[in-house]
Length: 346
Image 1 (spheres, one colour):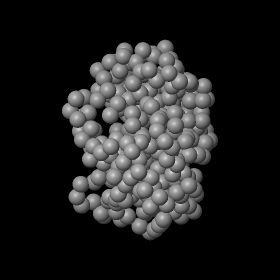
Image 2 (tube, rainbow, N blue to C red):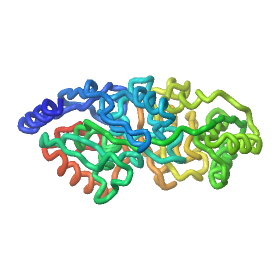
Image 3 (cartoon, helix red, strand yellow):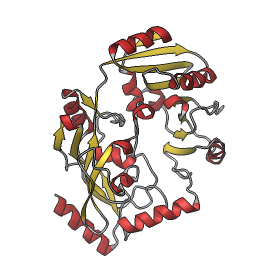
Image 4 (cartoon, helix red, strand yellow):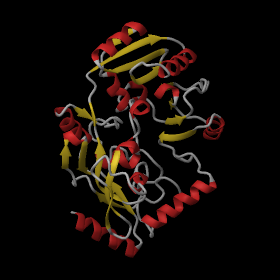
């Protein structure tokens, strides 16, 4: 299939035909314009290599995350960045292209931190490999991480090698009733202490915290913190956005700010993750006012999901950063055929 993909891309470049890269379509809602002839890579799936003792897995881009996680679970391992699976349809290529990470992200790292290498086809139709399949292969300029979060605008991902981690020996989830101010304060206070927190979520006047680690450490900290124990599957609803908060929001903003930022004081419902650093806003807001407020706090705001995308989806880039984006795009995709306009208007 690699040869077929390369030929399709070469012909598209010759004819200056835009290509719309798509795996299973679970994240079609994300990003700006989604245009061009469909280049379906969902069928290019399967595990290429997995070495549990080396904590490395390599799979084709169309491989479902559920399949990867089942294989890892059988070996007592997992993907530490907990990419959203979106009701089981999410693929590895889509997870890396969007760069989305789940509840565990601030405690273990983001998707970009676990990418060891990628294989991709650039805008000339060339089959390229970057990085490697071993954790110690870190010499040189790490081009493989550029594609994480690039929304398929730099090339067609065909294979990805990821670092895996052992699953925690024990986990428990606790819930506390408190105000938003108190929750932000507590999340940051606990993050500065030797408490094995692996996820936090605040919504509806309730702070939910997950502890992960050795059984004795989890048990001791549970007794210290108190709170009400709730089922662990709560986090699937947050990770995969199947919780009611996400399901009932036609418009959804994703706001990244320093974790200690005070409450944003908006009338729209909010869900807070990552010790306060990630704030979801459900419902339409004035984009200019929101982005101004968020920028003043040192963050940025993304229109994650909406029917009306007349407002820019991604936070505007500074001139210097925009120039870097354009140069990288020109180097990887000279004719601009990959997912044009999906991120920015270039």
